[in-house]
Amino acid sequence: MPNTSRLASSKEPPMTPRRILSIVTALMLGASVSAHAATIQITMENLVISPAEASAKVGDTIEWINKDIFVHTATARNGDWDVTMPPKKTVSLVLKKAGMIDYYCRFHPNMKATLAVAP
Image (cartoon, rainbow, N blue to C red):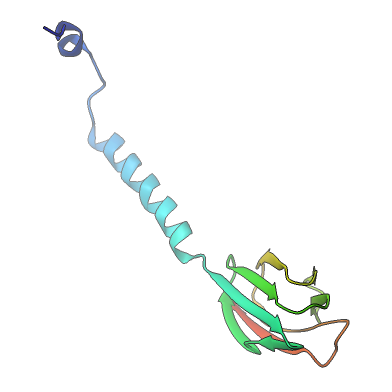
């Protein structure tokens, strides 16, 4: 027969309304932060950026997927980023500020695209 006297005598602090509110608030804040971030995939293949126009929000992650056998870059004309992608590799970047960002590949300047980043 199991010893239940230890379980019965266990004293845990009561769940006060204030404590419950703190727990619920923490859970809601944690859920709202992760629920808004997205991952946007942009592919570089056959010397073309696809999609050529994409939308994202600050905090989202951009995944540039290089399917070519060439090195590519995603170089923002405003200087926000300059990402180098080896052949057949994926590179990620978290967006830190809003704006309309034109970018291109430094090695293949005809590869151009625009990323609209909302706050």
